Image (cartoon, rainbow, N blue to C red):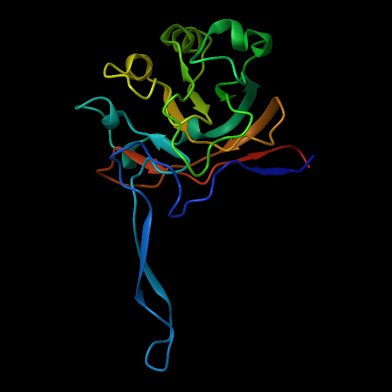
Length: 209
């Protein structure tokens, strides 16, 4: 078993985003040559592209931006729980097998193979009651390999609203394809983007060497 698991999918032109959101784009502002000693690129992307941390501003008009997020939820002991192919909503019955002595961070794998080049309109989401009950157990952060904790067509974002009300944090678009169930150390720090509604993260899991 490796000591470090990279759970961030590649960020590139074919990285899927929600329909209408800003896909990854890159162009070169400067290129190595006789008159230029460096390559310099410029990138444009949604902060929700690839592995990312939602900020409260994403679902609360008065919520904090990504740059104001407390880093504690994004760093520390976590548990990976498998709820693969369990249907459109992850319910309590899908994860209760792995909740004994639960750490404060929970990552739920819902895909056998996370879609890395095409958006899944039928993405697996979370039942709001599942979020409530995890909060009751002291969970600070919930992560998933899905693009959202709410159904793609939802206009009410009920699970995000539970996150808002209970003060939890969320990571989405994690790459958990190769990660066994079990306990790890999570490191997935958001960037200090002072006005953004989310932030890309380079998310990893560590196990003792």
